[in-house]
Amino acid sequence: MITGIKLLALISLFLRGHICAQTGGAPDALQVLSQQEPNLSAWALAPIEQSIPDAIRQNIIFLREDLLDEGKTKPKASLDAYRLAYQLCVSLISALDEREKMLLKAGYRAIQANVVTPATNQALEARRNYLMSWPQYEREVQQRSDLLRVNEAADKRKVELALQDMKLDWAKRVGELRANLDALYIKLRAAVRG
Image 1 (tube, rainbow, N blue to C red):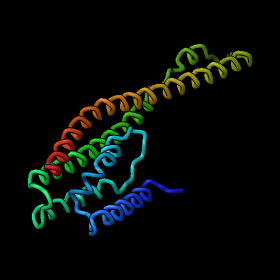
Image 2 (tube, rainbow, N blue to C red):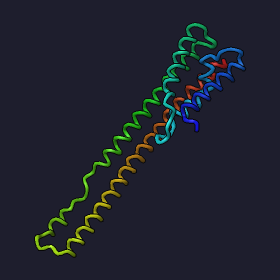
Image 3 (tube, rainbow, N blue to C red):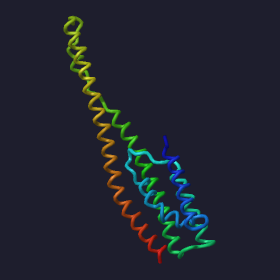
Image 4 (cartoon, rainbow, N blue to C red):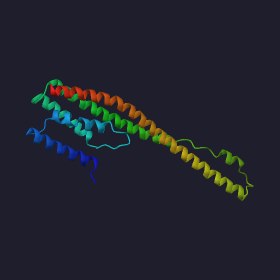
């Protein structure tokens, strides 16, 4: 079974080999970003419940640094293309940071929703007296278990609702982030071509 990290490594190795075969040398960072940006965006903007490879953030940081080095030492495109590539990497890292914050917030809200005050047993306690018969006691035990089941179901619904709210918030934010990333990518591709 291939995990996300292994898959990322395999894709990276394949693409480097594919690019090396096409260009006859080591791939330049601008070309790698230009070809891999759709995959990077898909991972950065993945649904909150979907896991992403752990090394994705680190790989983007390395790519960003390679772009800076390449742009300074041996640029293969205009400096504007390298500036746009740098902005794109920073935006991808920012999207990953927002995703991580949203995941932490979702976990906090789920915990917070679990800590609700349960329905009380005051009505049951008020009826209790020292002359309680066995049938009354049996009825009270049944009522307490019913009350416990209702509380557990309500807690579960609150947790699910809190997580659904987080998914909705992230989906709205993804729309904004995707528009920004797509605009940067279009500008980058135009700068690389021109």
